[in-house]
Length: 495
Image (cartoon, rainbow, N blue to C red):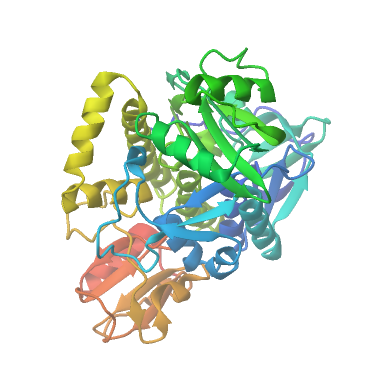
């Protein structure tokens, strides 16, 4: 489905009452997707304002997992070291529906692990990174209205102030105000299975908890009690029969559901955080309407099984950032910005499908349990286990760049090169020609594309052209063919 067309005919009004075009891009939402997108745009000197409706960062601690591809992207921008010291590495495995299988041997990544990190810590690090690069972040800036024309977008805030930019990106979550103001449909399925999640203290010994959790986990994959640090436990339990979902859950709701599932409430007390989530699955009809785009949960929501949500949004930001910057800097090929939707929406569709499948396998009904047992056996085959892990962690993604070798459209791992590691050369957010022939040139594209002539690079092909998001845009050794692909992705040569 193509993006709806936005008229570029001049507006009928004179524009005298419009706010000035102070910014190139306004981003609604300063979660991981919005903060990272802001940083990506600032790498290309794009003027960015991030509007976050909340006046203070979230205070409750929710542990999220960065998957292999997201960890690689952090390494590409020089962010990984500061994130690693705040997180905890865990083995890669048991992603798909919680089926406990070790990761297959020889995963094609220097970062084949899961990184658990508190979400507020990750958001703070990414916001700090964006601010250091020059992005402006305004808290308490709730979007209340928008109007776009052939020159830009006017955003009205809840306090009546109007700010204006050339583009607006909604990174404002599953209940996105930007998406609703655009009138973009968000079809899918409503939540059928709500789950309570919280952090609280317990009143029974760890050994008793571990034994009971192990017993229940054999048949119920939507239940756990795990240490969360500082004497608290993370509690997840089905919410069936709990009061109105529009109301926040209470400690008594948790006690009731724990007794229903485990036969005991474990003496839970002193809650630090109580919330609930559902398994609604929805995908925006469009990722772009004129000068307004959607990314992250504003474009797609799905059950959290497999831990893909935050990662999907982060990867949206990396795909969109350099393309939107190219549009603003004036060198983008005509269709470049539309490739954001063409590449990322199919990825979201796949995530929605695999989370639907995983939720079915979490059911305690006999049929889904039989399928789960069968899949557990099949995952003993390395090819099956590898396929599912690469799907969940996004290292198996291949964008459709046309016919060519299997590597075309895929991400390139962090290879050894003459100057150290490949990803260290991508910190500036520019494209890279990795040239093992030492005979090619970037010519008039050298302001957008770096060139590394390295015959020793650990690569099975003569040369590759890497986009700023690390995906292979061209493979070969012919200068004329390279020039054609440089034009395709990076516009007309300078001078």
